[in-house]
Amino acid sequence: MKATKWNHKDLLGIQELTADEIRHLLDTAAAFKEVGERAVKKVPSLRGQTMVNLFIEPSTRTRTSFELAAKRLSADVINIAATASSLVKGETLKDTALNLQALNADIIVIRHSAAGAAHFLSRLLTASVINAGDGAHEHPTQALLDAFTIREKKGRIKGLNVTILGDILYSRVARSNIWLLTKLGARVTLAGPSTLVPRVFEEFGCRVTHDIEEAIRDADVINLLRIQHERQRKTMFPSIGEYAAMFGLNKERFARTKPDAMIMHPGPINRGVEIDSEVADCSRSVILEQVTNGLAVRMAVLFLCAGKRKSTEGTE
Amino acid sequence: MSVLVLMDGAALERALTRMAHEIVEHNPEAESLAFVGIRTQGVPLAHRLATKVGSILKREVPVGELDINMHRDDLALLDSPPNVGRSTIKFDLTDKAIVLVDDVLFTGRTIRAAMDEISDFGRPRRIQLAILVDRGHRELPIRPDYVGRNVPTAPHERVRVQLTETGGKDEVVIER
Image (cartoon, rainbow over all chains, first blue to last red; front, side, top):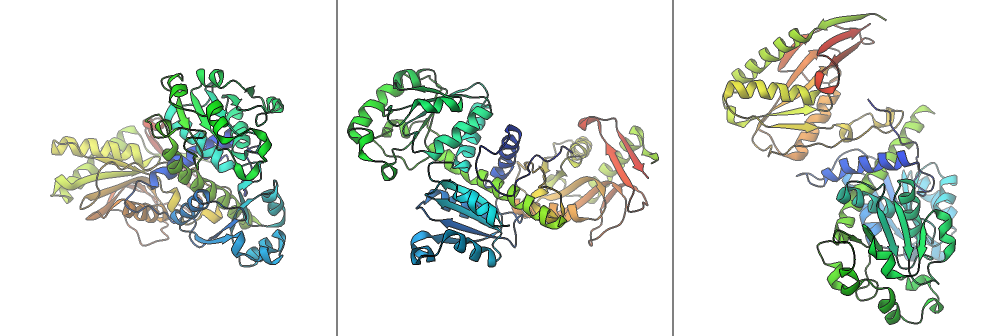
């Protein structure tokens, strides 16, 4: 029996994980993916536990994915959106979280516009805290599902050329992906307008370029990021149309990529901006498989974190 | 600690051959027979039984693999979360006569989890249990249909099955 390689009750970011822990999580996710193919798509692993989706920032796909993942593990789920919570009545995040814990919530999945929100909660609570996106800091489950998809399709991550294209500066998806891919030995290239892809990212161990043709030429994987209108000031580039013309992955540019280059996008996609419809819907695009894999990865995250917390409680 | 050999390779082989004949005898509707091995040691045993039964029946008998970790009832008692593997059952279980296979039968909790997991894949007509070593100390009302060897043990003793498929020589030992 090989030793278990998971020792976290919380998933706060990729930065805190070792390469072995990431690989163990991806292996566990592969087992959970198979559950989705059964006649009965539900296992009793988290029976009797309660998961709270605390989404202070709007999200449909991540929240739904966590909810379905928890339900497939037989946990009970409560959804709290910022607009419907007491946060609008002036309650602090700390008080909201302590109240949820007082209701014996076992797992709290939090999305928040402030970087470090999940770390903050994890220090306060004995419940497992899962970061579903904190500001422009990290979105660990997105990076894990991206890695899962790459590994499933390409058979490996080490040595691959992965280009992340678009709004890097404001993207937590980019940061989590950079941490993960460099830990697992991929060569990461960041590309986009110089205002959104500053040279300082070279300190993460990536290559930075502002020449899209060069960025996509040798890429095995191209991960496109959405331009985050909601986080940006207008000064980053002149117009959406200009961004699409300069950096969008259109049919002509797509034709100049490697014949087996894989196209990824965390969603929601802006058709005609960072990606053209022909490219988004082509056979080399794995955008919808990323969604399917996200469910398996989140099941693995909940299973491992809740499992670690329960075993710690048992020994106290 | 002393180690006592309960079965050597030849004894293990004879036991599996006898069990294969018993399985054929008790399942006259042979076309619906299928094996499901419990990871990790039950899987090679299931394949060996299926090969033997297949050569008696002159047809191929399907074999599935089951990982029961998602159905465990002791997740809170473990030091850390278990390594979860994939269950692979490529045939339709509905109306099949399933022979569930594991190496050692002890408390019966693994078998309970395996039966729950099997019902996630479909509704077999019947589930039977084949065990290489029954060491007693059941905590659930579960009994095997086919047994390689009954061995009275003390609860603290360990029964260890080694198989060539998983990197040992065929052998059953008891550590006391």
